[in-house]
Image 1 (cartoon, rainbow, N blue to C red):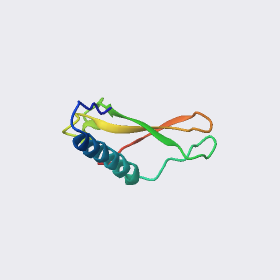
Image 2 (image 1 turned 180 degrees about the horizontal axis):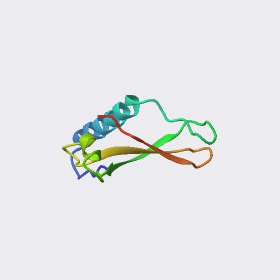
Image 3 (image 1 turned 60 degrees about the vertical axis):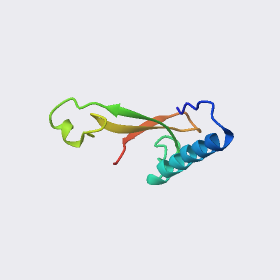
Image 4 (image 1 turned 90 degrees about the vertical axis):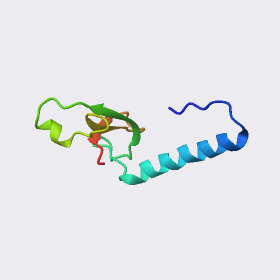
Length: 88
């Protein structure tokens, strides 16, 4: 969630464009997930940090987050929810 403070109009517009550009970059990084139940294209719903449960899991841990980022996707057709590990 992006919180915007009251600024002049030019600054707010620039910030909104930057946020929208970042969202577009994130969406282009990976192909959309396909629902295993109905075959529909899934929507990226959220990102979650998964903390390592063992020393072996810690190998892929992001130094910045202290865990592995997992993407959660939801199917608008049937409502199924699936996840995958985010790369990078």
